[in-house]
Length: 391
Image (cartoon, rainbow, N blue to C red; front, side, top):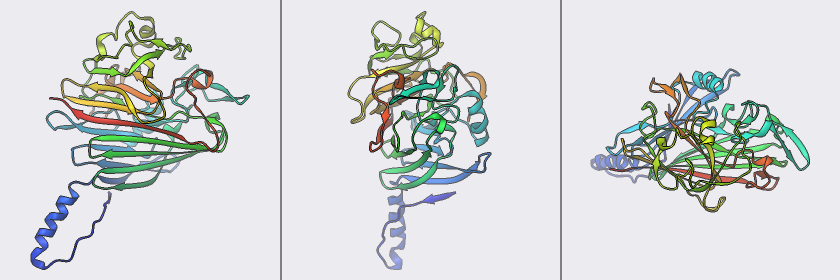
């Protein structure tokens, strides 16, 4: 394991003062973020996968894989200062290479070129029609069959100081990758702050007009990834409207008020409060799986999108983003077939996904926020996961 350390100058002192200097160095190091890395296996085509570990001095640790840009684990303290992993994932590369593909799980993965669905894998841009491979029939989901979640990213840089631990991953998606036009150059910065925030900054440029929506697809259980159902955890979403869908998950085009529906999370409520309501949209999705139209202006400073609170452990997650939408998903497809890091089977409602992104199928809905990226422009988005606890 390789450790990258920020060195500081130490003045020359007499031998009798060495103990004091050594003590000072330890104290200085104790306030610094740290970044370590190790080789974590190889892909079938021989690419080396690395795992980076970002830590701070407040018992937070984030593990990130270059395969898929995947957040493998996030350990955060509860109200008693006990840290535990709170995102679903696997303990070895083989499960990411096989189970994730088989189950279309996307645990912690970086999603692109286009997060969520594109109807029938088809969109038209500047008069030309493009086709993306169908990955969840009858539509393209999360960038096609070989999206960014199945690529090995390059660790471009990493650093640490008294406030943050940072990692930058990069990926170049060639023209025609999964049917999308243009060569897209992408970078994602993962920044763990000493305030227990994890900031993700997404950046992309293209040499031809294309469509882009990037997100990180973690599945959250604030009681612990192996703790079972999240139905008693409390969610608040800063959205007055949501985008209803047809039975295949494609938006109808309507921006429907949440008032009077099971999608009204403007005030905190337990996830399970209306999970089994006989409401048509809930029934067709077997739970929650909808995009919320976030209040406030997108594309500028991150604003509060959602808050999750686990009464049992006291952990709190605040999500802030510059993105226009938030997909709220109650892991409806998990059926106990897959076992996570803690050795427990993952089942429906064992976690929630909160994906900050563009609206589903936006390339086919001109009234939705723009997702077209052109040469000379930059895709620039930020999402912040802020962790705390309540007594």
